[in-house]
Amino acid sequence: MKLKEEFLKKVLVMKKIIRIFLLIILFQSCTEESNTDTTVDLIKKVENGLTTRVHIVGDSTWSIEERMKHYGIPGVSIAVIHNGEIAWAKGYGVVDKESQIPVTTQTLFQAAATSMPVTAYGALRVVEENKFDLDEDVNSYLKSWKVPENEFTKDKKVTIKNLLNHSAGIHPRGTGSYSIHEKIPTLLEILNGIYPAKNEPITVNKEPSESVRFAYASYVPIQQMMLDVEGKTFPEIMHELVLQPLEMNNSTFNLSLTTEQLTKVATGYLKDGSKVKGGRKIDPALASTGLWTTAEDYAKFIANVQQTLKGQRTKGLSKDLTQLMGTPYGVSNNSGWSFTLGLGFQLFNRNDEIYLRHHGWNTGFYAEIMAHRDKGYGVVVFTNSTFPEFNAEVMRSVAMAYDWDKFVPIHKKIEIEQSLVNKINGRYMSDGRIVEVFQKDNQLFYKNILDLEAEELVKVSDSSFVRRNSSRLMQFTPDSENETLNLIYLNRNDRTIAATFVKMDTDKKEPIEFLLEGDFDKALSAYMALKEHDSTYLTVTEDYLNDLGYDFFHEDRMKLSQDVFKVNMILYPDSYKVYDSYAEACAKIGEIDMAILNYTKSLELNPQNNRTRQKLMELQKSE
Image 1 (cartoon, rainbow, N blue to C red):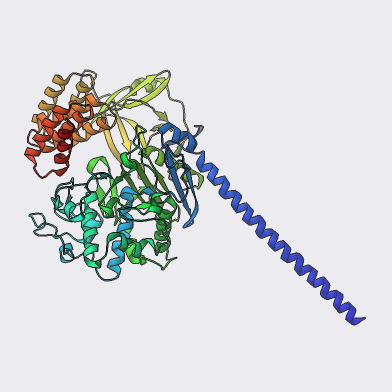
Image 2: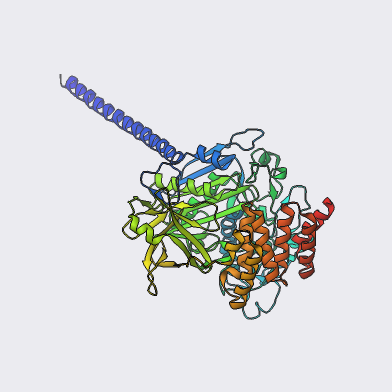
């Protein structure tokens, strides 16, 4: 009897154990299913949550498909990072309009300038092997070529750190790209600026460490230095030091892609929807713009950096050197962009939340990455067209779906009194830049006079206004000298004053306003008078006018583009750049004789400009 009772007890115990075991399995199964559902839900949120830079409560959002159609983007690849790991990756659209092959997570895109953080990581791996010293003169490592000595390098030498954080004072800014049918220059030809390279020789035209100034060409000496020290090709070096250890298995710095890689490559498309000749351009400056990769592979790189900074990963670059990549060294304000630079990464401060970011723009491709330095979330967006606005919309959708801290400003719209509208209507100016505030159909609008379209100005508090496409708050404050109101822009992070626009008299006009009205002679007279009065005034400087001309150029507002370039030629007749820019505008609209004439004048002033020489040769052949 006792044996039977003991046996029954054991059976009961076993049954309980089995029940518990089954419950555990069921719980795990439910948890896995729940997590999968959550990921699916988050993907749907991202796919349908694209919004403006500032989200107004009640506004509708767009889907990825809608915005791809709106911009005319054939293909997109997205990878999302959450908790320091890749949460998901997905492709949308097609690799090529003709073949209609769908984009997958294996599709290769040109990373463009987002190649730089990867190159910086590789260079720091060499530093870690004690083959480089970050603060040593680069000429002590360079064998095949040297940074030319001049008055700017007399007291301070260019260091590896200078090159990586863009404080070397390198000129020119870029080195150009080439069609697959053009003769491709060697790295030494690019460094020396000799044919078939399109760029001027790489030199220093500002004292190293004085300030940061973003330049793609800063990474070309890095590439040559790695070749000289390692004795291998750059793609081999980067494969061994970065791509292979981080399991970026689909990525390559190869200038010539393999047959297998070519089957995965996306075709590049221009903004007008036309295909890039040959499907892509070639960028022989591999260190700055030469990476072919997938969004998922690049996300592996980002996740590795985040994990290393948290001390959660020992494979790859050390934590100490990785921290240098996310350390700010200064702000670059050249060429219309303003951003803080680290070693490789650009750094983005959003309400004291620090993000590692970079964007890159090759012909037919646009890439952008954004990842929190310390909190383990981020996103990579690659497209085979060039619409940065789309990439930003996707990033905001990811940020809202995953609750990134303070990334997307969200406001509620409140009614505005008519008496206040009457006070703030008018034009406002700061350093020659003019904006207009006006009412139409019972709505308040804001318009930069250079833009084609106005934006709604939304009141969000008793004293503050926003626009959907600008994260800065705006306020109208009394002018201490008269009874009008000034328009104040506030910095988003600390609410300090970023700019003050003073209300203009109704009968006052700036030179650009005459150009916008089509009166070139009045505009020229006004520009000449303004330059004579103050040649440092922002809107009359050569660089500002050149950038303005290209803004109109890229918007296909060619009459305005030519007029601005023409003003610049008259104001600065000894500058080779002004003739080069005007010639490019003439060539775009088919005025070949004028283009040849002005390219020739530009070359007379600067015979070393290979890019201009090549364009001139192409035009002369076409006649």
